[in-house]
Length: 332
Image 1 (cartoon, rainbow, N blue to C red):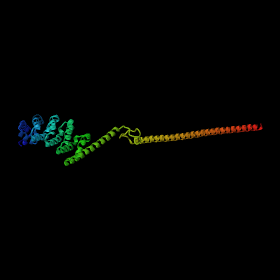
Image 2: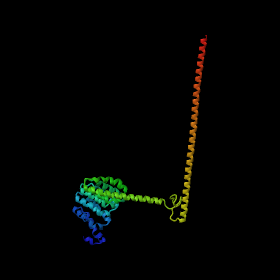
Image 3: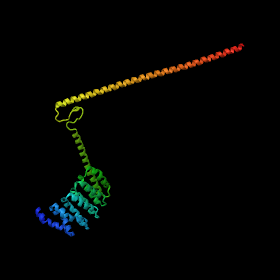
Image 4: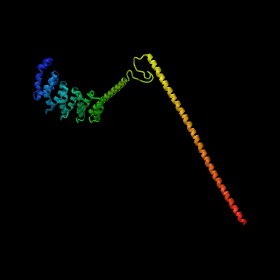
């Protein structure tokens, strides 16, 4: 209380050394009292003193047998983390948080998840998403209902640290089963979190579409050929084009379109002529074939008639010969 009236320089000179000595004391009640009132004086302690002189003593409370001291040590990170470097947070502090999330006390596991969410910005950017995934997704599988609830609330609070791919491929598949959880508060929290995640995905989709449209516009920038007609075939799109140039381009475009129309008409005429010739050729071929077939049939009929005539003549000759021989017999 007396330190509140001191300036920062006076506080650092008169109070901070006494605080460091007290943290070095192994008396449990002294440590508990220091941690409970840490929020009153933590802002006056320089970052270097916190990292070198206070954190090593505070860290012993993570493995203390007393659950109250473990929980107070965990809560103290909320005030000490902003004064710690990213390297210390990613190594020393993260190691203790991982152990605390497997604590036998369900309340400590729940507060660990909330603590990770509150100090997430102090982790290194390269490892932040990995740390958050590990902590929150593990909490989603915790058998203690408030721990699952804490994980859902923390995911919702830290949504800005995740990418659209993280949300779609990792968070939603892990969190969606909690929408049918046995606990009603967990179900409600899950549905609320899913709504926030879906809004984030919609925003990311709109940003991607906008970026794609801008990239297409930039790729068709000044000096690029846009289309046939309008500004003319091969006309450059430039804001400095004069109206006369635009009129000339329009005329040229119209001429090109007219020429293309003439080519199309000529092509259609050629196709019709070819079709007519093909039809005439087919008709002539059909007539010739029919004539040949008729001639062949006539020849066949003539041959048949000649064969019948020859047979008849032969038959008549045979009959005549028989009659003559019979007459000669009668005469004898």
